[in-house]
Image (cartoon, rainbow over all chains, first blue to last red; front, side):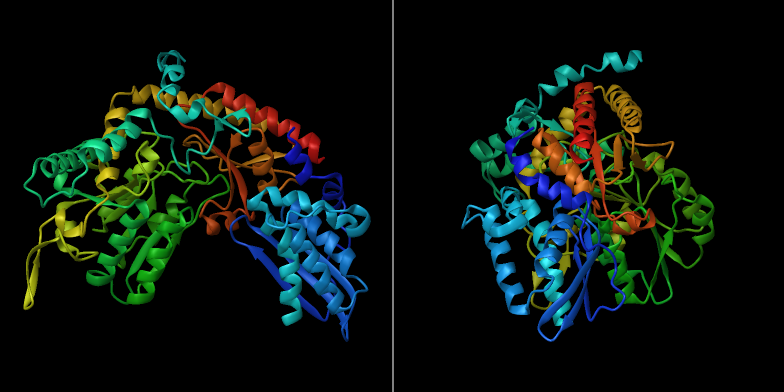
Length: 143
Length: 410
């Protein structure tokens, strides 16, 4: 098995894919949006409970690939309890980790589990899988 | 099985330079021929030779190279006609591919045939290229798009087809072989039934021409379209064949140079067919490459090639079905060598990436047939498609990689 493949499907990713956190529809959400990638068919729905600028809860449902699903699962962990401004910063970090121009060294101790997304950037066709949940989050905010 | 052994696929593989290459440090296992077919050296060399030694525009120059290019271009028109069993090369129009061929007919029908309340009949297993042009034609004219359903195996419901055909139907446009499911449709019967009501039929041959000999005279279809790049030719070139009376009746698609007889500011007269439909400098290198592709295929034992493909299909179907949790979408009794499949808990996109790391090229996605996949309740499938140059080792590598992948993900 190639090293690149192991970088892409790290244990953290496979774990979130198998046991996604905060999975399932939220009945009492305040914001929701669907994310869809027509090229590969990735589809997911984000449910948010906002209290002012405070994210009280995030859940998702999906029919998508391992990268998209685990990215969504990690996103829910990152966003829960954050302010909207902190969420912006978190997304910036994810986008930077996925950038082939920046080629940042991810650090598990600093970035937490989302460090695992750095392996995706070698696979140009898969970067959109990782960012789809975040785009759906911002779409939900906009309503 | 004797037929299979007589087709020397090992030798045929050496005609295709790309099959000897490596991707991701692994020998290429190319199982994406339904997307595009690889090119034999003869085609690559014909295009190379044209640009190196024969490049010239056609139908205009008096000089040596222009005459040579015109001859080669028109010779391919005759080869294209012969390739699909058409008697008259003038009924062959060069297009950029299947998509443009369908758009050309949809444009002509929009301009001169369809009226509000008319019906266009397609099937649930059409490629987007045989759906969207008709939606646009319907929007522009007030015609109505009707769809023949398919069953759970991916077989057309022929009773529904007969019931949907009526005096209102102005055209049936049907895919010969489904690119997603591999289903071979009974187009000859469909054409007979349509003609009984004087309804013309367009056959989308993008996926049939790579696999099996086609005879438009025997089918008696009114239009037949296919793509050069799926019959070992270059991309960006394709063929529309139509019955003379139809092509003469339909208006030009694009206009400009080379499609006119005489231009005056008071008015313009057009060339007859095929020139009427070929405005501007065409894809000459593509046509010459396509001519070489026809020569190449004509030199093959095509019946043997088809038998070999069916043997690959059978071997792959048996071995894939044996994988726990794998489900094949498209199980029609009449099938070309295309297998769409799903594996429990592993998304097709992940299957595609995993196989790619082992040098195995398959397609993952909706295959430009979103309505069909929706009918099967899936957003995407993985698709392995086999050509006559694939071998049984390709099947084995696919199956081994899928088994390895299952351990990895589960």
